[in-house]
Image (cartoon, rainbow, N blue to C red):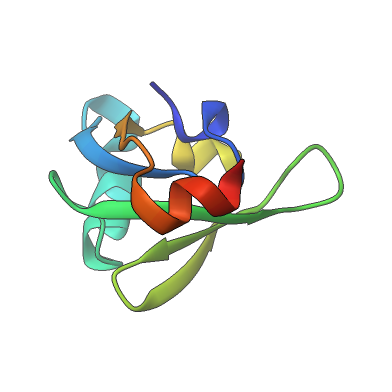
Length: 89
């Protein structure tokens, strides 16, 4: 699943970073910003024009990425539980 497919407020775990071909430099930049396999992210906000950029919480950091960069990240959604699930409904 791609980050673009997540709803605002939804959390997910990074499953894979596509590092092939011309994406290698951008993938390295993502790793340097804290994205890595197993890292939990949360979609915080989307830009008004076409939903770009997308603001993400990665650990204690907030990072805004262009859609092109988010497409290098494959994620798996984390089901909402407890208080957060009730607030989202």
